[in-house]
Amino acid sequence: MDRKKMMLLIITRLRREYPVLRSALNFRNPFELLVATILSAQTTDAHVNKVTERLFKKYKKLDEYLEVSPEEFTRDVRSVNFFNNKARNILSSARMIKENFGGKVPKSMEELVSLPGVARKTANIILYNAFGMIEGIAVDTHVKRLANRLGLARYDDPLKIERDLMAITPKNEWGDLTHLLIAHGRAVCQARKPLHQKCLLADICPSRND
Ligand code: SF4
Image 1 (cartoon, rainbow, N blue to C red):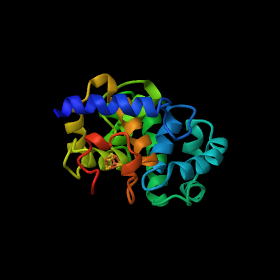
Image 2: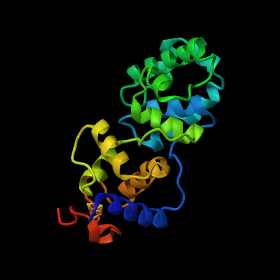
Image 3: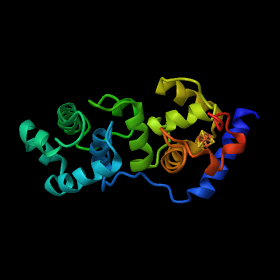
């Protein structure tokens, strides 16, 4: 099947199966989504939500991230992987947002990726989930795995996977595609043991017998 047609079929079936689409990360504003997304690298969303529940009660405004000492903030996030780097990136991003962007999380890809700890994936997530803007497709570990298993991309590099997915997906679906593939990756097409027998994509998936 032509890859564009296959993508439309995948989206239609997954949308039926996973009708409620939202980020699994809890946040109240764009900056909190930025914080949660930086913390989520190599850490489960459920754990990040536990950490941010406390964090967002303690730090309610951007300025409070500018006032805290790096040592104290690092302690606040020490239960996530790579907490030293993540703490440094969050505090540096807060400072840049204050100094360069008037205290507001910027709304363009170019400006977002200028922030420490923010690459295209995080920027795509923020643009779509905080501002409803579609610029690209956020490729996380689930999207990467499913795109390859479904034969939609054949790369390890998220940037190349994103480029291939963008070429075969209607632009208005780019934001939701990430949520749909993540939902299916968590529920059925799991990393270690994909549940081929229960999969609603098995008849069109080239990896169903792997
Ligand atoms: S058939 Fe298997 S490998 Fe293909 S999408 Fe479904 S669970 Fe994943």
